Image 1 (cartoon, rainbow, N blue to C red):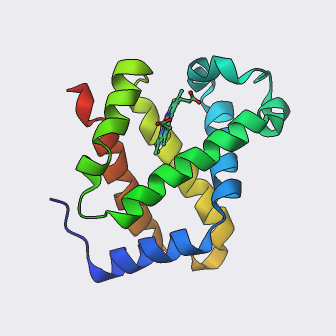
Image 2: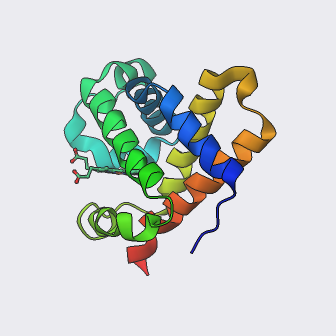
Image 3: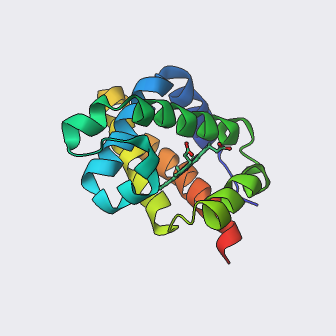
Length: 147
Ligand code: HEM
């Protein structure tokens, strides 16, 4: 089981209570699709992902960004049970969506970048470390059903 310090727990709760899920999810998924264009192949039913402006303006990208953030919220509420909380989501991404698990890390990095831009100077090195540890656990849990 993953061990969390009090600082890490408080920091994760604090970040997720402060950020706007809709905006952070939208921006993070947009960045992922622009910076790592091969991730677009999984979202072909979302329609026009022709360039950065089209991706940013695509309402399905915005809606799915929110879905991802709500998925993360489940982990925030179950920090001691992230692997079991994500078991079904891992099966979905591996067996139905066939998402290459390397991509989880890429989206996680985009989330870190967007959270950093929102929090500004309060995004200290310790806060970054806590967020990246949390996201690394998510990435590992999502990849669990692949092995
Ligand atoms: C669906 C979470 C990473 C591709 C979903 C859903 C959630 C979710 C909650 C909805 C599941 C449902 O409908 O029951 C996450 C989280 C991620 C992540 C927390 C990592 C932080 C990725 C990545 C890709 C991806 C990196 C592809 C590059 C998809 C696709 C769907 C989906 C294609 C289905 C979309 C649809 O049919 O509307 N994801 N996901 N996910 N995810 Fe992920």
